[in-house]
Length: 229
Image 1 (cartoon, rainbow, N blue to C red):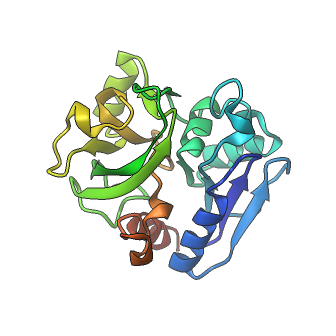
Image 2: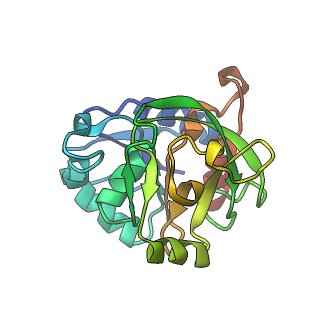
C-alpha cells in the first residue's frame, strides 16, 4: 500500500502518521510538501493534525488553498481514499470534500485527553477491522473540534450512514459530558457519500501500539491495509 502524507507549515503529526502507517503496512510513506503541485501515485492520502498556517483566518482555511490541495481534491473525486485527522478534518471541510465546519470548542479551551468513540459504520475502507457499535479509546487534542452543520445536513449524514465515529461514554452511551468539544450529535468523524473520504477529530496514530498506552487506533490503519492491498 502506497501512502502519502501532506505536510503544511504548522503540521505536527505528519511524522506520527508516517510512523504508524509504516509500522502497520511495512511500506515506506511519502511526505509531500504543501507547495508541490502533484501527489505521487498513492493508494491513500492523509491530511495530518497540527496547526496548518498557524490556524490563521479559520482552522484549515488557508491550507485548503495550498497548491497541493488541487490535486488532493482531484484524486479524492477520482476515488483515492483520503483521511483527514484533526486539522486534516478541518481542511477537508474547508476544501469542500466534507460538509459542515469545525468551530471553537464549547468550553473555548484547548482539550487534550483520551475519549471514547463508538464505531457507527464499518463499511468504509477505514473501519472494516472494527465491530459496529464497538467502543474504542482514542486521544483528542484540539481547540476547534466542535462539529457544526445545519439540521438538513445532519439529518442527511445520519440517514446515509455517514457518521462514522461518535463521542460516547465508556458504556457506549451518547451524553453531553462524553463530548470534549460540544459537537452536534456528538459527531467525531464523518465520511463522504462514496465512503472514500474520512474526517475525524481524534488521533488514531497516537494510540496504535501498546508502547503508547493502547492500540485502538491501529485497526484503522489495518483496515486500510486490508482494503487497499
